[in-house]
Image 1: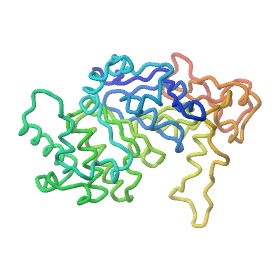
Image 2 (image 1 turned 180 degrees about the vertical axis):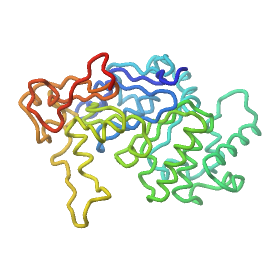
Image 3 (image 1 turned 180 degrees about the horizontal axis):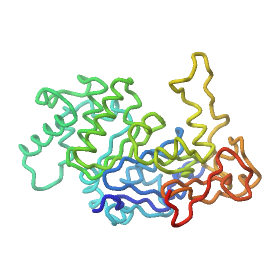
Image 4 (image 1 turned 135 degrees about the vertical axis):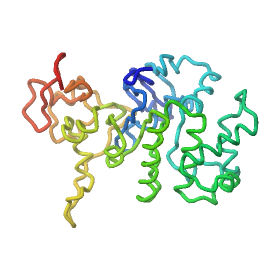
Amino acid sequence: MAENENLLELKNIVYSFHTYGGDVKAVRDVSFNVRKGEILGIVGESGCGKSVTAQCILRLNPEPPGFFSGGEILYKGQDILKMSKKEIRKIRGGEIGFVFQDPMTSLNPTMRVGAQIEEVFVGREGYSKAEVKKKALEIMKLVGINDTEKRYRQYPHELSGGMKQRIMIAIALVSRPSLIICDEPTTSLDVTIEAQILDLLMELREKLGTSIIMITHDLGVIARLCDRVVVMYGGKIVERGTVQELFYETAHPYTQGLMDSIAKLDTEKGTKLKPIEGTPPDLFSPPVGCPFAARCDYCMDICNEELPQSYRISKEHRTSCWLQHELAPQTEFKRELYKEGDVK
């Protein structure tokens, strides 16, 4: 597979949940790709659809109440949505690993750590018990766990938070997958352990060539770890591009709002952070126009009436915002649009 060839591609995914109050339209026409060996970040507020989108890739959302209304999920050219349960089980853990959000509750408290790592091989032929244990110990060492024989026999409650997260990463890596999906893997950890986990993921990418999807609301994590970024809001992608483009050539008010709401190194003591006023849209009945219109300081009439089209600013950088339209007023977000043949 060529370096820039797509390992994974989501095309126009629409995913909803049946509830007593109606259908929650959690993911609305989402498309993106992941290339071999890259780290792709997915960022946004809680409830924007990040985790649901990630779990759609491995069909981890319960169906029902969840259901797909359209789209394709192509892994190495094969559509996961057309696979049988047996075929998907081979991909889960084998081809694609998943690191869940909270290591404190994701591990089974009644099972020893070694047995949980080895569970990936249950139902797979061609591995003896000794080979499976050897692989488990090897991957524990790879993720920075010392005294592996001792840890192998311990229960989750005997481990620290950072050690539990390393075990979660070991579980995701034990079969040497091509892709790992990390769903906010550092949320419950202190900053020192968070730094160690991020260093570990970067090291594993270098050693194994593994592609990573990093789901987070922390722009610091995105800046440190990722090659490209997808910004989600209201179940839709509102901006995407390289890390450099997203941080220094921001083209959507929501992306700028996320950056303005965090403290920076030069933020003076006592300075109040600037929140994004308002609340996210109701996904029982999503707005017909831009999902961010109700909270946007730059909202125009058309923003409430029609979904914005996708504007291409460079080869990688796109945004869905009416402020890029030629008839829109001049603002800090207005960018020169990309034309085929442009160098940028």
